[in-house]
Picture 1 (cartoon, helix red, strand yellow):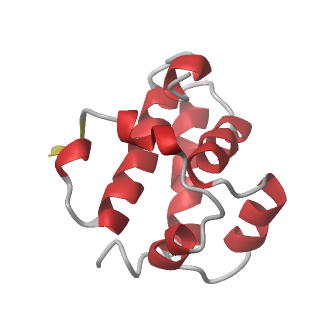
Picture 2 (cartoon, helix red, strand yellow):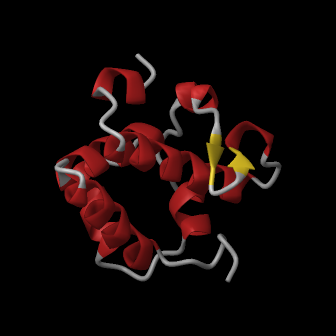
Length: 113
């Protein structure tokens, strides 16, 4: 399945489960997701209740964070900053943020502040 057609509502609960297993919270996943995309928490929840795919989710994002290019490193064997397809890169950036939450990184560092 391509990143373009993957459903946000199928993947997002896995993000939450991953961080909760490590003692972190769903609110932290919300925070990094809204930081990356510019959606409000309410908008995010509306999208999770819909059938939106990742391509649409990122294409309609109110404001992709200008600091998203500071998200670097390897996730699932791929260097985030070298991924050419924009949708795949955005998905992997979100994966990386969630991974950093699960690894116990401080939120200020995760949000590249």
